Image (cartoon, rainbow, N blue to C red; front, side, top):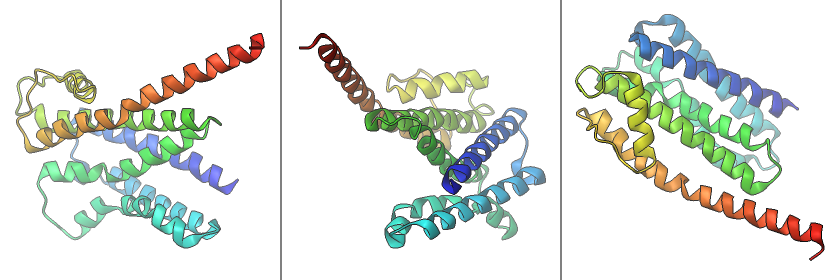
Length: 222
């Protein structure tokens, strides 16, 4: 019960973070100067850390759970607030990447929660990876737009960046060439993610067809 409630809260906080970052990106707001966002992200990260230790407390095999969920803990650390307080100097592109670290934690949580909606293991895995694929494409489109729209005349609107992200995720490619380092990194991440995730669609469809045929044979008594 506690785990279900925590997952729902994490899901809501993750959606709120995604919405806030999206609005700040579209409005070209400097997030380090946006104290409301920095404070909100800090407390979201604190909640993520609390959730980790609550799960650790209730786990039967605590050491195994700690190892399996260590990435969740590392992604929950409020790096952006630490950088701001410690006055660590990073270029704007690196800072923007750091801003997405808590979102990676939220994306993993969202994929797990949505995966729970199905009792079928293959369907659950498919739904989880589908959520990850959509969020990766969306996050990369935000990063690409933020870094490229000022210096790249081919990226004149966010919808252009979203189209570019979708085409690269599908491994089809796009005629828009990134000119910044961050844009080039994203251009590598997207097709690699697509090549890893898209084969799962084949597995899911094969499983779906096999189950449908088995159900049909059972109904006709074959």
